[in-house]
Structures are given as C-alpha cells and as structure tokens.
Image (cartoon, rainbow, N blue to C red):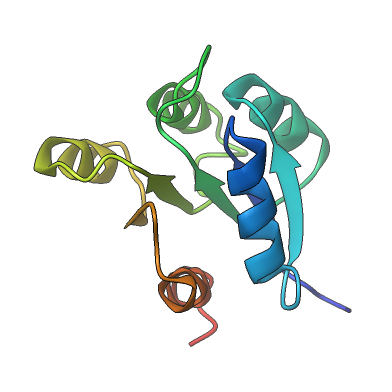
Length: 124
C-alpha cells in the first residue's frame, strides 16, 4: 500500500512478534526486531512511524532502548508504545517519564492494540 505506516515491533519472544505482526499487517507495514540492539540497528537503516517495545528483554531492556532513542535527535520523536507484561504503577509511571506515548499490558485485547496504534499515529 502507498504511504503505509511502518511499525517496528521489538520483543525477544518470537510468538509475541508473530502476534503483533498478524494483528497489524493488514493495515501497516510491520518490521520485527528480536532484541533492543536489533531494534537500534534497524532504526539506523529504516524510518519508522511507531515502535511497539517490550520492556523485559535480555541485553538492552525497553527502557535502555528508550534512553538511546532520546539521545538521538533523528529518533527521539518516534512514538513508542510499551507492550509488556509489567502492569505495576511503577512501570507505567516510568514508561511515561521516559517518553512513551502509551502502555499496553500483555495479554492484550487485539482491538485495544489496533485502537492505541491508530490513535498514536493520528489515524483516528
């Protein structure tokens, strides 16, 4: 599709990446990264409109990735939605503090995911 928005989904669990891709690929171009480091490498090569980011990953956590994004003027304005199993207030507050646009707790409702993605991308 012309002008299709590009989403980078970042999660160390292949099943989670497959779920995100299957739920969003009918409307968006979904790229996948299995680690924070792979996400940063991908962002050096492609421009994305939104990042769906897990928090708990080996190596670079989602918060580490956010810190790297904030340091880079070319990347700091990419909206990020954390998609994570962490449902505590502390994690949600920390996500907001580091600049996440939204927060979705796994397991999530597929419709809630689509609505949050469309909203953050300004498509609603």
